[in-house]
Length: 317
Ligand code: NAD
Image 1 (tube, rainbow, N blue to C red):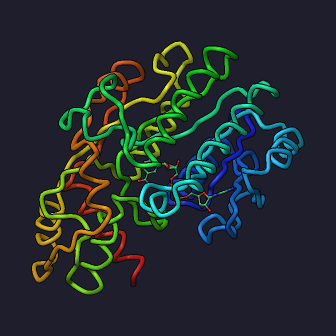
Image 2: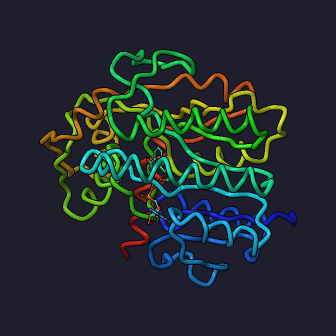
């Protein structure tokens, strides 16, 4: 068992719950402190220490880091894309201040490693849509994307200027069955499974041909841990790595679900989230992640759909 002491901030969110549980398996339950604004998530209860924390309160965060001799911080607290568009100034404030608080404390206290996720939302309408490269035009048009892009620059700055070992991935839309999504534009790809099982029909808030990069949660958790466990020398990108797995449209995922639930039907009523999706890439070029630290996805549409339905059926039982 490794000797690190890890703090996960935003541990009760869609990624945080599963990441905390995975880290507890690796590092020992007592060595991974979960924290969030919300009440402790059901799936975390009894599995390890939990602290109520507002990451915007820098002093409290600093005290927590010192008191528990924290050596690694995973910062997952954020306002996501769809929610961000409803309150842009709040999204900017929270997404920036949370990261700067963590980076600055990491610098002050000599924290070994920091993880902070970026997103495909850093790309904008002028970026190449297919196989979007690591380095290309980056002109985000959502406040979420703008905050993620600025965050990436801050991460690289803290690494280059102060030697903070901060690592980051540009996650695609993440699909999971354990914890609920937090207000993103790709949330349809989770809702569709719940509605297919419960109602046998789904009205999608994106149009049928909207292709977006997606990833199944087990791949996202593995990517995060593999990046964080890689030797420092292998991490060549200190802003944020492109990360890819699959790309599909609402029509394609509906057809895949229909193979398991023949009576399932889908219709389309695009809303404000369509404009957000239109500005994003359709698929990612993640060559740098593959070459630098060996990234390789395991789940594509068919395998992910079968696994989602199997697991959701068991939870609903
Ligand atoms: P989420 O919204 O499900 O979870 C975020 C958690 O942070 C919530 O539990 C929330 O209560 C907590 N939080 C919010 N404000 C806080 C504060 N002030 N102090 C402490 N905790 C606070 O989000 P998620 O989907 O788990 O995303 C985690 C990270 O991954 C975010 O940075 C997000 O931008 C990024 N990301 C997610 C996706 C995705 O598809 N889920 C895709 C790309 C990037």
